Amino acid sequence: MTHNTNASLGAAQDGGRAKYFHGRDALWNKFYDILKDAHRERGGTIFLVQGPPGAGKTAILHEFADRAEKTGLWDHQRIEIACMYNPRRMAAALDGSAYVDRTVLSTGRTAMVGVSQGVEFTREKHAREAAMHRGPSSDEVLRSLTASSTKDLLLTLDEVQNLSAHKASLERRTAIMDVLDIIRNAACGGPVVLLAGGLGNSADVLGGFGMSRLFRDCLHNIGVLDAIAERKVIRDWIVKGGEVGHKVRMHTLNRWIDTIAAETDGWPQHIHCFAPEAARWLRRHGSLMPDTVPEAVMERGKADKQAYYSQRVSSIYPPYRIALAALVKRYPSGAGWDMRRIMRAFQEVVLPGDSSMEVFREAVRNGVLTETQGLYKFPIPSMQRWLLHHYGDRG
Ligand SMILES: Nc1ncnc2c1ncn2[C@@H]1O[C@H](COP(=O)(O)OP(=O)(O)O)[C@@H](O)[C@H]1O
Ligand SMILES: [Mg+2]
Image (cartoon, rainbow, N blue to C red; front, side, top):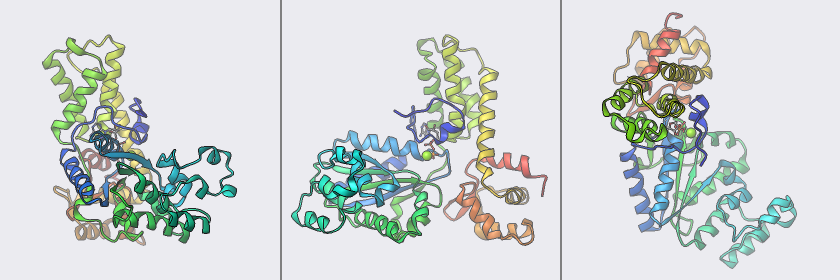
């Protein structure tokens, strides 16, 4: 368990599993349908979960993988981008302990020995092919392990937008495309599903690797948690994390949840700024709940939230932040802006010589603006307010 109990900014990016996971039921149902189809048809697909930092992508990858494994039909392995172009990494990630000679890997003499000697092939042809080349490629490693596996294989790959860094190298790009291809085309010799998580530009990045279009059911932009799930997460942190147990009084608990939920907007990262802090406070104070949430807890949470916003916009060129704030000021978003409206607004406010399109792209790339059904908006309402407050007067 890699869960980080530190409520600071880093916690949202620690890549761990959520301690008290709730919500995302509709998404799970869709994903479960995909798993069932893949199992029945012995097929494969790529299921992409996109969203800004702190939306809960990594948590989803962990949770869904756990649930898939609980069906008893699926084995889960976590891969990294490097696995897709480095066959040794792929073999190690797929935990092919029966196939990979780990002593050979760890001596670092793999280049001399050749991976083919460490990987046991199920078919003669593969073995011969592999011997002819330097060794099997990542897609061949994946195929040979799938073909010999008794279970279906679920792969998870986080931060998939980072694939863009490997587009320029022909060798890597080809290797990555080969892996994606055999998954998408159900050519692994058994059911293989890749559950990928990444920022809002991930689908575009995959597009650059030949995944010209992900099927409608396989691309999902995630946003806030619904109010019920949000309250359940906060409650679990207080009751279980704070170890209040039978000492809890219902109306006090509800007041605590109300107070925290008023600050969190359903945003997982925000919940994580306050709820673990409340739990820690309770444990330090004998798990006895005062009538109201201690000021120290709320202050700490608010400071963490601010730090998150500052960090989120820090990668955006400062004049562009002002342009975004000006956009919000002139055109309050409501349901969201369509792209033409945004471009027109940016043309009015962006400094001469700057490209409106570039402001827009950068905001989308950083997940400061996210798209749903053709409309763009700030995924977290309070971030929009924060931006206005900090940059609204500078335009
Ligand atoms: N559905 C959820 N239920 C409970 N906690 C969640 C949920 N989703 C995310 N979290 C928590 O919120 C924080 C941010 O989530 P994370 O998965 O790291 O976001 P992302 O990967 O999108 O940046 C983490 O601390 C995570 O444990
Ligand atoms: Mg993450």
